Length: 44
Length: 456
Picture 1 (cartoon, rainbow over the protein chains, first blue to last red):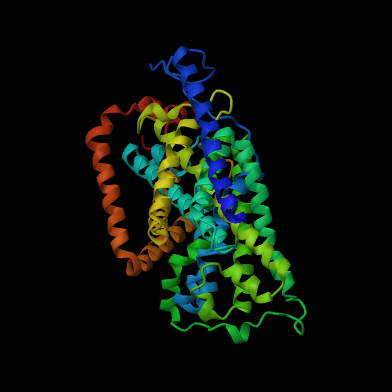
Picture 2 (cartoon, each protein chain N blue to C red):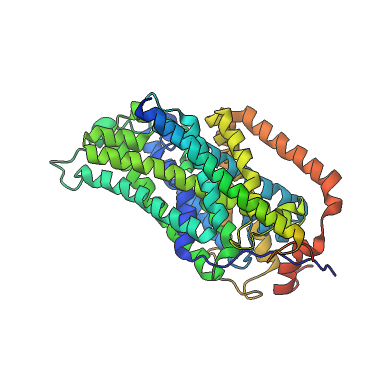
């Protein structure tokens, strides 16, 4: 496998990793809101 | 009385961040796109169009800054429209802002992928387009302070790269200068009508600088940060635009320059200096990233503000408990930007973005007249007063309509499609959404802070 193919794969991997990190946090916040442990927002 | 808690964004931004937001979104237009003015109006037509469009944007920034400095809410021109024109116009302005910035963001990411492909034919542009959009979305998700500090750094590097190119030409020593303006420029081949034709591409030098007003709510002091950041940003762009024209016209023949994809990069290649070529390559990529980054910030603020005001579903009005960002709006707009990026139709995407922007400009001129009539000078405290009113609004309106006419000759199908889209969206709003709008929430911030407007 040549250099550029590895770089292409690394870009894919980094994109997937960032999506994973962002959505993990997103769902954590959303479940916090549902269970009422949120610090800000939502209807009172 | 509503018992709903209103979500607020954190106040962390200063003039530097507002500068980075405005200049960051726009600077990509100096690295590509503006040069089509040369194909339309010739070398002299291009610089005249650049300055006339500069006049349009100086007027726009003055108008926006006066209105924005008294409305410290996210949403910029959308917020102005909701107080000055009513819910239907506000819905349309909000939608136009969202599409202007989301489409520009998609176009920027497409260009990053295309530029990287020039390094090697084995580079596949798709992962880099996705990585750009996802990476910048994540940055925006994590906090506006870090996002716009990052934007400041990459925008400054991209801007400096233009001056590296300028000084590399040794323009200051006529005997050694690489610039050959008399030989490479073609004057005004199509006369004055060519200048009008060049308007639609001349706006690339400044398109998006009005986005500074969208971060009004997040400024530590809106009445200081917004005028200082927006007006210094405009001066930065006027200097950058003139230097860009000067250096590109002196290094690349007008025939090639009029159809170049990356005019500044081509100008750097004409110097045959490796360091300058690398700097401009980096500058081009960073300018695209800065633009996409600022577009994510602005589009999400417009979407968030519309949601908080109940003009669209309230689901997008949530603020992240730790990062204080409109996180749902930021994430919601990501797949839309990716979808536009996947179309690959760069010119169509950009044309819709420009049309949306021009419609907002025309409405901004009208709003300024109404603002001064409803709240005359002295009736409310202004952070900035636009001088010579109504001259800036008149100039803004005339030049915007002139640009729309110029655009009609080349892209009339796109314009009719765009108008049809906003008409259908308006029908949806009037027939379905309007009955769900909470007018108390919509106007509460203004009602609390301002006296009753004159004539109401």
